[in-house]
Amino acid sequence: MKLLVTISRLFVGVLFIFSGLIKLNDPIGFSFKLEEYFSVTVLDIPLLEPYALVIAIFVVIFEVLLGVFLLIGYKPKFTVWSLLGMIVFFTFLTFYSAYFNKVTDCGCFGDAIKLTPWESFTKDIILLVFIIILFIGVKHIKPILSKLGLTVVSLLSFILCLGFVYHVLMHLPSKDFRPYKIGNNIQEKMTVPEDAPKAIIEYNWKFNVNGEEKIITTSGSYPSVDGEYIGVETKTIQEAYEPPIHDFSMERNGQDFTQELLNEENLIVIVSYNLARAEADGLNKLKAMASMAVNKGYKVIGLTASGPEEQQQVSKQYGLNFDFYFCDETALKTIVRSNPGILELDKGTIKQKLHWNDLEDLKLEQIKKQPNESSNSSSKNENILYLIGDRISTQKEVEALDTNTIESISIIKDSLEIKKITDKNYDRIFKVNIKEIP
Image 1: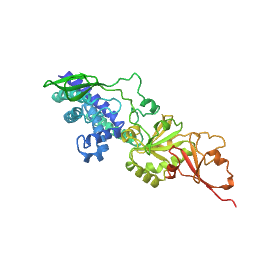
Image 2 (image 1 turned 90 degrees about the horizontal axis):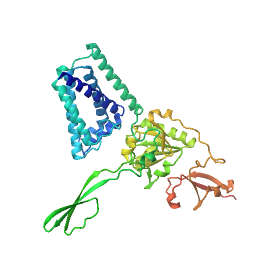
Image 3 (image 1 turned 45 degrees about the vertical axis):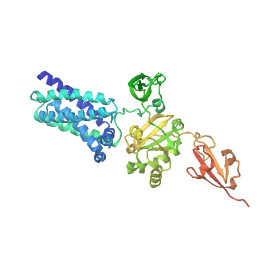
Image 4 (image 1 turned 90 degrees about the vertical axis):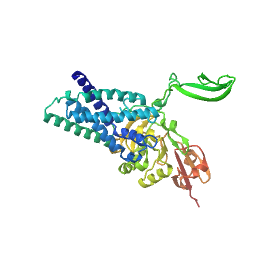
């Protein structure tokens, strides 16, 4: 029994520390998972949703500490009882999620190791067996340090956990396990390989044949049966391949600009999954950063799941001079654990990713301009359109005008007048005012 307790002690202790540290590296991601559990469609306790981050931090720190306590033999009875209570709760949670298909990923190991609901439940059952062994043989759990040593190690572990979680909250996770990590190309991660597994679905067709119910199974085609059709039930035998990035898009005014923007060479993307919940200090920093990026030749856009009215309100309040595009909220939460967060893309490849606290670390190069480019023109990758009165003009036509006749040139992008001009998307649209020469 003593040997079995020792093996269980090592296995459970190491696993709890490993699982806890992975979630401690990304407490915001774990809080999103808790919000999903607390939602009306799962456990129906939405009152806890605002406290998801606090609960997440408490749970992961407690998880790490329990693993440390078990390994060093600190307060064995308290530790074992706490382990038993935690594993019973999470076993129920994973079973509920798996049986009712409520949450497809429990988040037990964050984004580092993805487990299906039933895999998570199986893992918890195995852990439960080992913890029951510890519960029965708790008398064999002996301290490996002196009383002072146990206190010092326990306190030091708690302080280190607090320091680490504070660091990742104020910046970004130290290790990024998500498909949007620096160096990855978004377009490549959205691509489905030609040899990727296809979905295999079994169709069970029900017919009434001569007064008896008969079931015909096919892979999808309607069977040739002399009988009355009753219904059909489907069963997924094999899931189709799903690319790591499958819910990313960049839309504006009902149009999809994903491919166009992912082909931009120098693109700064400001991500805010919810503008109403964005940090005010972070939003205040964006205007200066965006202006600096534009001056250096970068194209700057925002990416959010908030609606047009909220976009306009925030842009006006904080003086933001860039356009917002729409993207799914879940995707934005996955991209960067900061609200707002900043990305630099080069033809879809993530070159930099920063928390708003680290905006001063954003490194932007001065991009060369096209020869003879005027101060009013845009970067070489942008389309330009001019409106002179009711007439649409090209840049060459405007340059051919007598400069004495031009009173002013102003950007009218986002103006309702654009809709009267053309349906094509232009990066810069100017209105040229002509003054009368006597």
